[in-house]
Image (tube, rainbow, N blue to C red; front, side, top):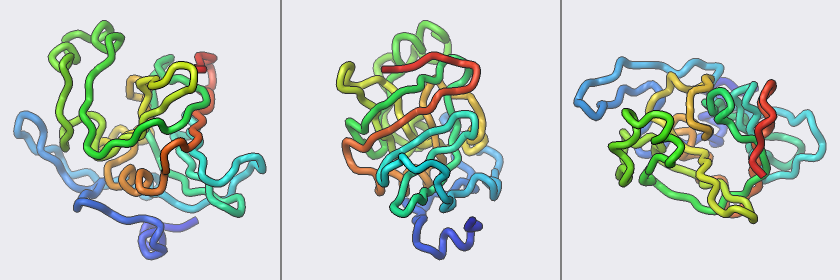
Length: 205
């Protein structure tokens, strides 16, 4: 296992755009969020894979671990810590990266607006990309051959307190500097497996 210093020194992690999970960001209303230092346990690290059937160049998300694995040759992987969908909003299944965007725009889905109109209806026409955008600095768009865009994303967040928590509307989130690093590694059409959450059988084919 590599600690933060070892991971940075190894060249496996590159902070981009001056972002850091420890930095405060200014909210939409101009209030500064309290400084938060991402715990050491949430830093990316190289690990050995415990299964033989994972090919290099795949993404595997294990919601009960709050972990995303980017697989490497030699049965190795980079493990990132993530926040995942709350309750039964998490959708297990097999996907591929059908689109990639830097500082993406965000539009809540009709289901999100229906569940919480007070929070989401004002964004029904979309929100421009930026530091206060819920998709953060980068987004990987998850597709299936049958459906196309599933509206599920692996994306960034400027709120590191949501890492290691089941809080989202179904997507997996990383802090911004880590999602930038992952984004730069992941090519289009990469296979993505969202593994089932214990206690929930809901899946996305």
